[in-house]
Length: 245
Length: 232
Image 1 (tube, each protein chain N blue to C red):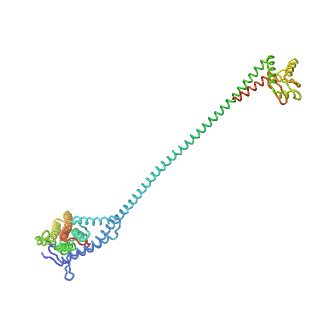
Image 2: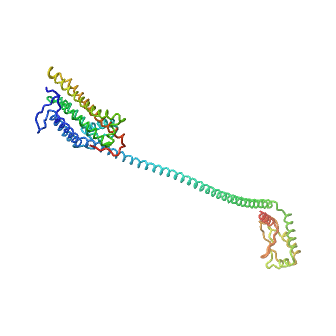
Image 3: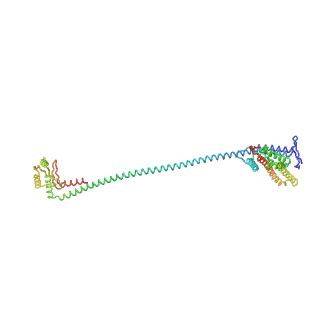
């Protein structure tokens, strides 16, 4: 067995050359492709992480903003509720005050109207009572009552002052004697005689009939009226009752 | 059939005899270089089937180197990868009728073993410097210096003999069976020879990597690392 050292050296050189050539045309390009893709993948992963970090940050910011909005909303709702309660209380107080005022005024109006109604009713009742009395008295008028009224008339004349009597006696045109019914001659003479006794000078008497008197006699001049009848009494009563109401 | 222990020159280039093994080696070199160039012309970021297969080969070799050395595969990829691919293609070249694999010749295997021997020295010097490399022979203690020096030669010699013996025997057996039993009978033996060729290429490459990494690690343990490794 012999070793061909030329062959050994040549094969060694061949393999070294092959190592060098394959390193250039095969191993390095393929390894570079692997590294390039790994770097690209790493870059994509880095970008994805950065994007994810940005997205997380945006999400956190959005969540914070949303929480802020919720808090602001709660605050606004609380403020609005508080303002609404205050406005409601103010409105309620105002309404209550208005209602109390209205109630007061209504009560006053009611009292006033009631008083007016009561006064009106009292007036009407008084007038009705006076009318009833007037009608009743109309039915019960008699000669005795007339004589009584004549006596009362004479007493009234007698209570007049001297000056008034003189003035009455000097009335130009005479005086008017009003009676509810027409007086016959005897009655007129009786009345005339009675008045002459009370007055020193008796002017001319004019006898006038006025059924409204119901009963009684009245002396009327242009400047003087001596009331003495149921009508005058009833009118006085009516006036007094109205004044009392 | 010529004896594998003898190599006859086909022709001479000056004083250099060109044997069948050298010629076959040149053809294999041409095929590998041209094929590698053609296959790696258009590498893209998104790989097709071809590029994926190439990357699978490179990554597999890288993984083997990383698992064996525990270091980055970049400085060793070209040498170890080329050793594996060349030995594999050379072993499988026996499947072509009339072609005798270069690895079945003594000189080729001796040349490969010599390259491993010198690459151990080269990577050791690169990894830890002259001092660190020389101190690696004193691991674990100076008493081992003679044995380590002897081992650095014998382990390479064993690689050479193992590869030569396996490939030469395969060629021998197939040749004998073919001469005795006809054309198709050696096919199972050829399939077995393919497996043997793959295993021997793998063993040779792994052993080379183990020897290199052991020397580099021993040298680095003797001297702290000072500079990063570079690609060859």
